[in-house]
Length: 215
Image 1: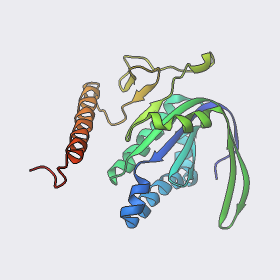
Image 2: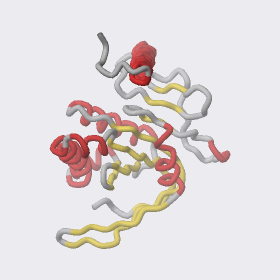
Image 3: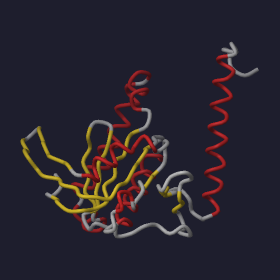
C-alpha cells in the first residue's frame, strides 16, 4: 500500500470510460479492462525503483484510480498520467482524468491478507473527483489552478508550452498527452470535433426514423 501522506499536492482522479456499458454488453472485456487498470496501480505500488523514479502513489477504487505526486510537483503527476493513459489506450481503453491542487491526506487504516483499507480526504481529492465530468474521454484536465485565489499554487502552465493549452470559456488547462509535436494539438482538436459531429449526425438520423444505419 502507499505510504501515509499529508500535504498540499497535485491529485488526479482517473475514470475508466465506458465501464458500465462494458459490464452490460461484454463482461469479459470489462474484467480485462479492470485487470489492466489494477495492474497499472500494482506496478506503482510494488515496483520500488519506479516509485522512487516517478514520485507518485496511487490507489484503485472500483473502476477509478486516485493518484498523487509525493514530491508535490505538477510535472511528476503529469508524466505518470501520460504513461497511464498510453498504457490503457494500447489495450483499447480510454481514461478521463482531472487534476487538482490543494490539501490531501492518505492514511493506511487496515491491511489483512485479503483486505486493505485506507482513508483519503482533502480539497484536492474532492475537487478532482467532482470536476471529472468536465473532462471528455481521453482528456487530462488540470482544473483551474488559481481557483479560490490559491496564491500558493506552485506552478501554472504556460500558454506556449508544448502540450498544455488553456481551455476556452474556463481557466482549466488540458494536457495533450498523445501529442508528439505542438501542431498535433490542433489536429487532435479538429478530429475530436469531427467525431462529435458524426455522433450528432447519427443521433439526428435515429430520431428521424432512419434506424437501419446509413445507406
